Length: 227
Image: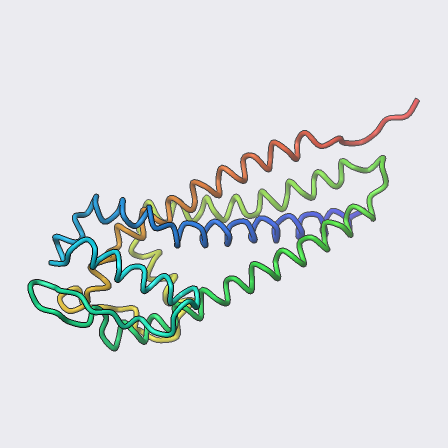
């Protein structure tokens, strides 16, 4: 029965990871979120662009990440001058970001497949009078990811810039993500406060999922008792 518990915990962890990556995908491409953040931070005015140019430049980036276009070349009027919005360094960084995003989608699909297989295997291993073991494994899988999320929340609230820098150092093998706000339009479009709000939104939605999932697990039937 220990194998069933391990399989159920690992399976639930992978399924929850799949949901997390799906939430990241949804939040990262929610155009309404970008518009709210731009309005809150007066981004267009601060950069010296019209709102239409800012939205268009954003759409170009998001379409590029989703493989709907081959480059991020786009022009806009910035402080009265027509220019390319993104420079060479930003363009090279976005190549890395797109590769990371596409790999995350692949990881999500793999997590879904293996998570489903592990949960099915755990179910087949468990006899009807040992369902408590299955519930325990499911709870352990959710709890593990919950602890990791809690640690990330604490880190973000204590030192978001440190967390964000660590994230880039882990997932990128160069320093192209270090952009000069005096030169780069991209970094002015997406300052650290933008990503802080994005990360907290992702965590809030995922936390809601974990709470709902935990409640559902507790409602699963446990050990059967026979007369």
